[in-house]
Length: 463
Image 1: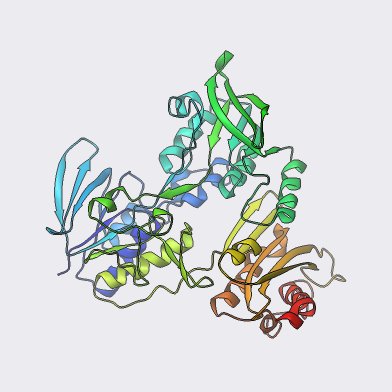
Image 2: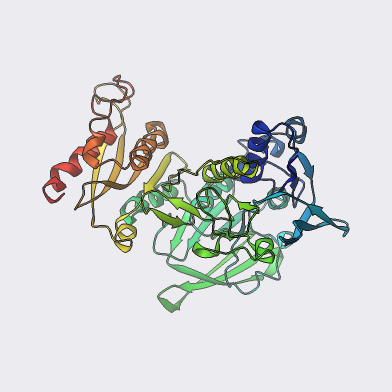
């Protein structure tokens, strides 16, 4: 019987264990989980903070009992500290300091990512009891809710990416005044500036103060239990920024957690994530890796990239779990599909933008179109702003960005472009797709096809 050991109990690790168990009921995967919260949805944290999901326990994809009933063994509050690939052993330490060595035949590393901590003076000295938080785990979540239970009035969020924007809405829903600060010149840096402006306008419409182009340099205790946050304009250090707030939330991105992988001599790849092939094998025999600790195959680039996404982690984990018990499954790859809701607006992207495509040797050209989500004569039609990026030489679709009201099905429409990217379609071929139509929900040519057609009209002669 294969002794399958999995380090990590989040999306990748759980998916790996469940898939291995499906294929080989004699395998009893043992999962080493650093905390007490296996299989919890990190993506759902903002919606617990907002109150939409009142009980944090409901963020569990499956309960511990569910996982054990499915045949998984769990070692909670246990951290893997070293891997000896020659002996095929992993050294682990429990929360009370006990150390032991676990044997394995196949090992899957699913240690995920860890929050980045920017060089802000005071950040290493102040913590949750001071009102200074990061947000990546259920433990972080419970610490933040404890702070919010003290009825703070003003929160400052450092970072205007996906989590920062979701948390701006969540804290606003809790009744706080919210200021969001971003070092780059725009919020949501993963979309083009003109589309990001629509997101900033939505934040402003809900009285969230947006400050872009500001680098935060220090956090310190102020008077009356408040926090003083200092910074300056990115390109003009003499232009100072300061704020007095009750809560600071630092969410500026993540980096792969590869500490234990390095102990095994596992090779690292893109952005120092664990290098894996398309069967999720690492450079060390008998060891696979999946999820936010590993890089991913990008179908558009036809090379490796670092795309820490929950959807990717689940798929990579499934592949790793199957192959760790003798399978030959190949990870199909990612195209970088992302979506975020900001109050009543939804922004989504997939594939590459102009500057990204240029850097990777394509000859991109983009076109922006606005089209209604359904027939205008049926009440309630709303516009969707769509930017299509295609290759001037081949005519192939390279990427798409969409922004529209939450009722315009932006999240599902971006999936059409993601599917087209997956199958390496041209922009023109999108117009041939047989998509559903009824006047309350769409048009004979859907908004995604109208945008593609507009790109072809303007750029087909160069394709």
